[in-house]
Length: 244
Image 1 (cartoon, one colour):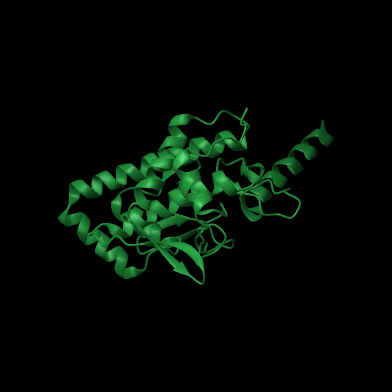
Image 2: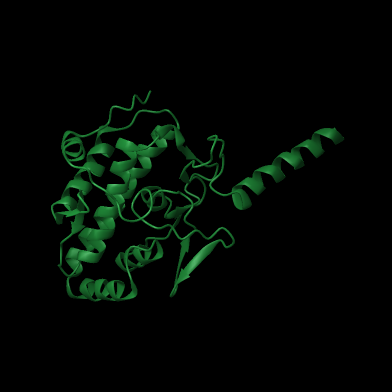
């Protein structure tokens, strides 16, 4: 059973000594909710809706229908960069710069892409285990911690209005994509250490979400999608039972 004792020593040290604030949203990014459409098209790439309510969970959900016929949205480095724009972390210029850098340094881009998929796997495994009251693997926690601390090395600690805040200070060719991965890892570390883990849930479709409802009763990633389908299945089952 998950006992909640998952804070890595390095992360705990940083979080207890310093008051680190986030400037955007509750877990560090502004989700662009799209409840009325299935996907958002970024140029020629389609991305899933942002229904996780936490950046790390939206990253985990970058595979559609993981329990049935998985559809990969992060198909390559360029898609990873464009996903960063999809969630509001990057702008058009940063995406273009990242794609150009990939062409100039394909080996580095391939490594970052592989790191992104590894981080996503760690996040998926850890939070599915939490949602299902399972055992959280040490390797998955270590993967999240490593990505977080690696990105933290590229940050500068600044004071703003009497409070400490991490500012991204890396300026390399791949810095924009590295920033996206760090923010995802930061979101996961924050959720693990400060979030209400009882509100991390899995939808019937396999996606993860953070239940922000007042009474913690949310059951689906989206009411108009999975929720409606579930109600239709129950309705059909009742009609069949009545006919029997």
